[in-house]
Length: 256
Image (tube, rainbow, N blue to C red):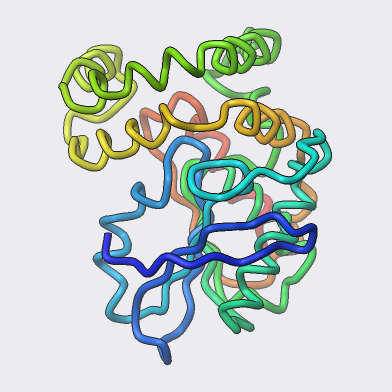
């Protein structure tokens, strides 16, 4: 994507990488990423809106091109810290009000940030996410809660192997074919974007990634739904297994 890359410091000094594009005087749109992909995942949305909005995004602390916090304590990855990072992004961008678009963890972050700063929201768009505790509802199964910690630990120990496997997995259709066969991705998948996402994902710091995921699993902003006083659009995928569409229907019922 043709987005300008920048660097800012959050309240605790953590260096964050930011991305922006669009006319400087246009209304602001803030993209809150998922954990499953870098800012590249927004490419088609950015291409559609960049002539009408000033679009901002950033990498979460310790993921992709943002630095980890100095001490890497569990609390350094809590949702309150993520909200402080978003505060820093908006302050650097001089954004007072924006349309917030959340995907996956970004859904929870946007809800939590609304609790903190509702005056900043012109509207809210939420894609494939939950208001909280996503592990409890993933795959419509109770096995996910005890199994996910082991998967995160395994990813951390396998980090060197994952990094070494990147040339094979990101330059061939092997992973794409497997995911399509298992139904994890759509037959209409944008394979170019997917391969870029995989390339970035396999080079993640999985210690930071695991701490972020565990903080996400503890967080719950369900009580914020009934307080929303801005236009809200919720989008779900019929075949989304990680955040089943009934979760989105339940959210919609609770929003005024």
